[in-house]
Image (cartoon, rainbow, N blue to C red; front, top):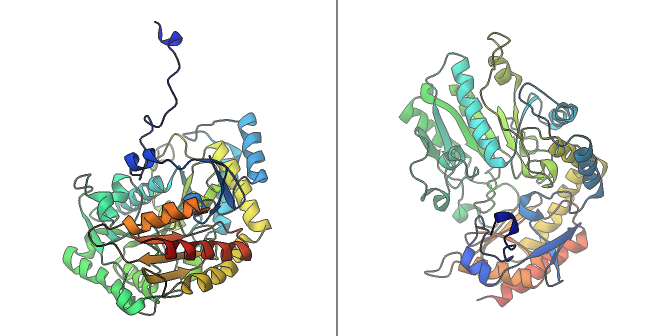
Length: 443
């Protein structure tokens, strides 16, 4: 029988190899989302699910926003694709200009990618190429941090510090080292905002400088607030100290703001909130409200200008993606920025973050709760692991919450909360109340 006449395959769950999912467990009892609007998903069985995770840290303006839908619809009808290698289209330049107006002062160049993982690998490559362009090609070492998450490309895996994400994939990049992590529950347990203790942990970079010599180190990359490892805010003074050490030794500082960018902490970027400006910022996720995949890497003019010294007809940076600055992604991003501004969502996140912190810290003393951490509109409730079965308790909370109409994010035995910035006071209270009931119900 010719292929064109073959019967259509049965629609089942087998073909899709799901990411970051225990596939066999999920497919035995699937949780299907079929629609979404504002603060809620609708499951296949019809029950509503309050989105306590902004999808996957990305739907900051809420679901089904008509302004974004219409912008994408109009764009695909007008210009569905345009190459950005030796060509261009107006919305890519408009979006880049809008983004740099929002970015910390001095970060006025944007390189478009398609994801946080691509943004990280792009930033690392820019850092390496920058030193080479300046005649300092010996700076090839990259420094990440334990418990850091920087996506799933080989560059991001290498500088990342989450063991389960790394151990199956070989050695990664050569010449990578890691700072100590900042998680210190003994001194900083149940912290609200930035923990009091731990600024001195930034001095671990001086240890690595002494070990490798500063002349070999290109860049340090950290998340201002480590997200996927369990929501770890930086200790007071830590980022300032890290910035000073990098300046002292000529090392570029990269902030991975894929999670913290675009209002999550109550400001456009964590670097703005904390008053520390890096040399490069990586973003993705909420840059388009999660509607169309996109990432954006912000760099300073100092970095950009270092590449602009050769013949004008020669490509300055041999890097990019087919879909860099995709027209539909730019259209979605422009509409998203309009919503953030028109509705004051960054400022709203700061206010709602205080209410979320009040609610989550009130969970102290409930069964299995060993720590609560909050900063901006982000919170973490860490649970005591079941002996011999790490992650099982948090996963039980996740599945119970879904059945009860609440979407959580879990990492290890930590429950992470990062709702859309449009969340109301009543919905914050509902989220916390549902979570409390879940914690009382699980073993």
